Length: 218
Image (cartoon, rainbow, N blue to C red; front, side, top):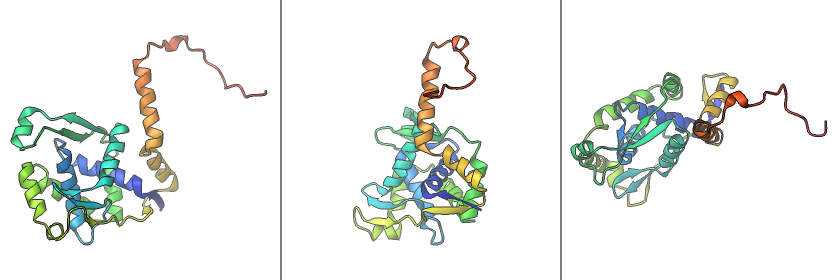
């Protein structure tokens, strides 16, 4: 049994949520609402703090994690086409958010089950029942939730209940690998380096090979 940080759990949680959208989440507002709905269950893990916003439930921490996942290349945001905007009543367009790398999703589901056995089912049902409703209908439905209606603008509706470190059914080495794979401070520089190498005209055949790096003072 090992442990992972709360932020690593939040990243894999949001990746799992987004992966359940067959065509991606059409608009950020939709993602906030669908991620909020599983937290309504009294026994549920609550990764994100949600506040009452003019357009419904909103989470600053979810926005931060979403931005990190985009920066690391795990999530893509592409403009929605006109037909989708019209069919879902999305004002001013917006982006479609989707997962670019799905190979670790079975592991993420396993970890969610280990933390709370019913959690993946709550997420799956939220996406299935609310994920592709027209935006006006989705916002109206979420406005009717009693805890939302009772709150004032800017009030915290749900606080995160994640501990700083979370026990998971992985070895310490596996936990370390997972942490590194979802750590922006490590992954983002690697992504930028890969992009820079793709754009360079460097001829690798002309790069000198060395057996070891020189040690200063030797």
